[in-house]
Length: 201
Image (tube, rainbow, N blue to C red; front, side, top):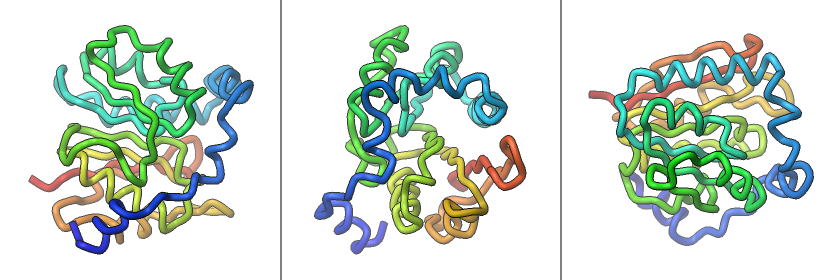
């Protein structure tokens, strides 16, 4: 990890992402009901679960932003332990209701660009539906933070076109030498990608 990057993490108070003010109150309450029957949601769910499915029970997953806990049922079913982080206190309150076993889950308010957890403390990280709310620079900061805390794999969703384009090269430029792009799968359309980065053996 470069000294300049560590200096950023230690001294910066990141501005809240554009979308951070959106998911509060009634919007937070209706988040899942509005989306879970959509094709984008179901394909996303299937692909992301598939990217984690081979991990053994007892492995740790970081879910950030966790929202209301859409992946929690999957984590419980697989026997994963998980850390769930979100900027929205309202989303975290909803997420608490989806935790089946509090001994296997740690929920906390926080920012993916300055994660409040130790180096290499989780086996996998999931960052779903966040990149559009981060600048391109902050997408790279977030990926560097995920590499810092993750031992094995990182899953990220991103659009490749339009106003919120976050191309694959943006993430590749932020990869440390011991990481590589392992999967680049299509979501509900070709321009919406689900990427998995793996730490090299």
